[in-house]
Length: 212
Picture 1 (cartoon, rainbow, N blue to C red):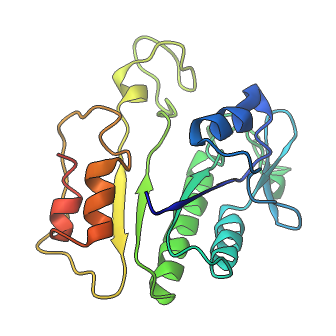
Picture 2 (cartoon, rainbow, N blue to C red):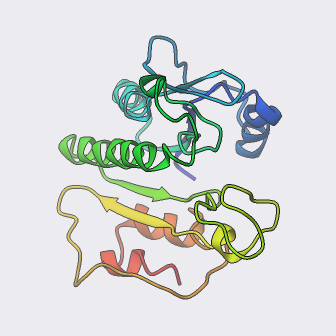
């Protein structure tokens, strides 16, 4: 309540009707943010473009500054780490997406950190929640080889979740909060508890990140 919902992808969302699914889940009739003119960082397994995360997030933030809404909630989906992606800059190198995973992961993390830095520089108050869909099965195990995800074992289903609170005067009380206890997948969602506490400015930063 009180937030204008917005959404953006770094792909066209056609595979498996993903864009239609997200639109229905968000209850939005408007299309995602246009991507024309942005850098194509990768190609998907079906040769459709995957756009640079840094440029997509930067465009959204620039557009956000021109909107009248006092508060906005962005849903952003990136497929930069998907299996089968091809990096145009590595055309003559090993095309195996497992081999290029580290490079793609570092670029994604740099884009996310750059987005957070831009939020901080703009003096905006925001909560950035990073939720992976599943693990990449890079190493494989006794049940299946690396890259295969037919059996949903712990290495695939147990993924880290990150929450970053930014804004003027936002200071963490104590060290970073971390939990190694398995949590349900719905706990990190921006539901009434986390969202209302952040919007109202109540509680210490470490309390916001406890996921309890």
